[in-house]
Image (cartoon, rainbow, N blue to C red; front, side, top):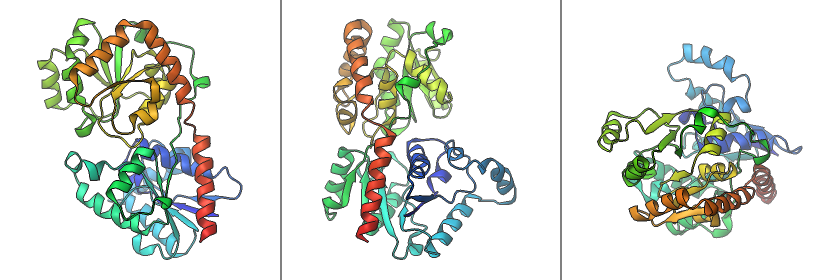
Length: 368
């Protein structure tokens, strides 16, 4: 079985959950004896590409030197492979349809990562075009993979013409394994009590709402909020933090994967105020490191965190404050939630994800 995986996500992201997932598919499916996997990415600075293409470090400087838009080379090579009929199954990595006219009769399996563009278009620029392309791909797809039951529910509610039998739920895996966590604790981190926020901060991620909600608690308890990932604070963000007297308490860091585990492990809790996600990698990463998570009770969150989450109703300032105080003041409950979270996180493995995906690919290919 020959599988071609579209490279577009590696043009769009330097890091991120979708590119992590796609890179895991590429490297993981290659481990099955009866599967050949190709992803025509010959230039990209995405963090995950070297995990499946070691030569990328040599191509990048050369191609970026002689091309104004080297990412187009990935697209062109992908279309050449499609036109040459070099795949039995094609998996788009996102929703650009540049390859659409080259598909021919090749089977298409479409991963749906979330329904944020359809449900909350005002929060993401370019939603209209994404929705247009996504709808086109949904109609063409032979099968659809959703990353959670909640995403599947949202998909079927919005695209009512889809036959539910055409949709499967396959959860992502957790890249942090409990047995691989380092026993060492960074002494610098021990000196500082902190909460952790992971990911981008704009729009539906609700970062502004979060800092306004917990500003007094951070000051009262002499704590910090560490923002992992994302760009430096904008001028507007800096002004807001200064107005809340948090300029010295809220910081942006960009640790590597090993350092991230230590930040999770030493954090008092992960604060995850996003009001919608398809899956939410930081949730299981946090729990697997023994870090409890505070999050709202909507979207896919109860499905992923289960009974290990400290939940509040979306927009409920008193609700999130109550949970934060509970984590700080009730040590026994926090310990119980940590133990529960570690066990729940074990349910999400890349081995399961890849095995289920491989079986689905075989079924779709056989039915063709």
